[in-house]
Image 1 (tube, rainbow, N blue to C red):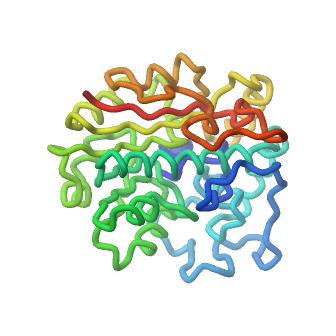
Image 2: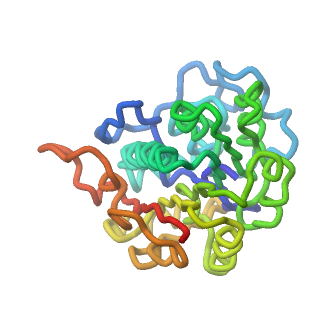
Image 3: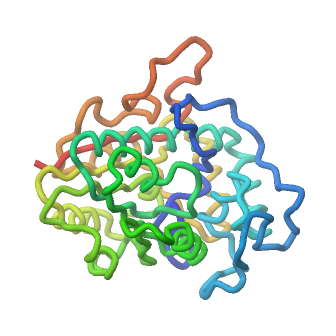
Length: 318
């Protein structure tokens, strides 16, 4: 998946949070910008100027439908997307122009949460719905603090999987599993997962900007329970989830735009996101807007926390 794919297969992040990789300093979200197609990119191309492999050559790539992971890449001015992805992403930004700022805040939360987990002694990470790699990936964050940290990425989008494998060449402590996060058995029993992660010890399970692509009808409660039951005491669950709580009209319009492209989004309110952590004990400050989770103190002129449009939290299994 690709931090969001909800067409034929689901489970990643996506255009709802088209991030601009947060700088290492954890700077606050900057004012939103309109995404622009790089001038060097061919109109129908799936191979941008920075790419050294053709997206068309990757088995399973669907170039007829927009894909959430590739739209996410487009929002970052990345190379791994097609014309249909850019067209639908532009429609998304038309109804929610704050998208890039929302994504930057989400990315900063990911960094802080991974650092927190490492500082708590976690050296294993399962990143569900990891998407197409961008700046500040989980293994990069974790391995700065602990070079021995191990990371397994999971996504069902072929471009995300291929590009991640390329990025991880030479890194024996990180691997990619191409699978749907809604199929915990496939994820947990995959060879890379079994080889790199020892679930008899604490592990951090990351569900960052992915669960809004998992509907109640998909059996989200059973899915969450399957991952939780595999974890040992001392493990952590890291979640961020877009919501309609702040701007319900814009969220509804966004869902309608994405639904036309075959991507279904389920926005959950604060109580719904809180329920994701059932069976886990939330750490302070609980379920809050992304800038509020152990972020820098706000200053005059900063966006209001609710403008992140995203609830988040970290919890421990006890």
